Length: 202
Image (cartoon, rainbow, N blue to C red; front, side, top):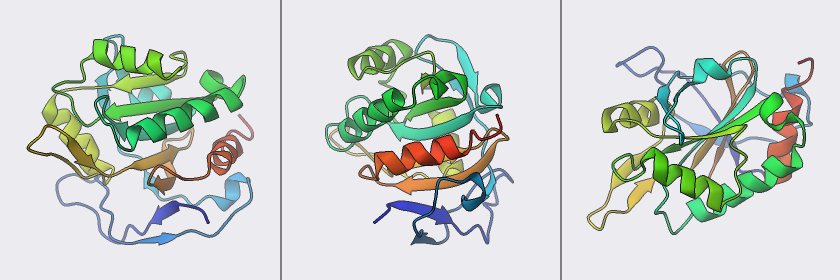
């Protein structure tokens, strides 16, 4: 059973027009790997953050590529160590399309501790190909803004852990949010097919 969800955007957040509010969700039915079968949810929220190399990276910089956006933090001991290796596995299965037509973006929800240097070590530990995968951080205010816009809950606990929603979004080459996967145990093969389906015609 797929773990992807689609967003029913019947209300937009009042703070900014680009903000997305998760007002309802459902398990989406299986679909074939055709671009036309993926819903067009809304314009994906823009962001401008700092990469593991200390360079500025904005979603707009990746226009023309299919982008998978997810949220992690490096000291996570529960589910991030499941999600990141799964994405690394898919990265390797994408072959020459990875980096050229498809990019991954992992945004930290713990910017106070996840400096660019820390993120780079984390990326290398999980075999991330940094030619097509950016690990991003920013000011706490910038991170709060992007998590809110993507409908991700993140809150630091008393012991320093961060409770957060595990939401992986696929944005097409035109910057349109197409599908979101809730949780970390979604089907990597379906994820790969969804990514590739959006590269048709590129």
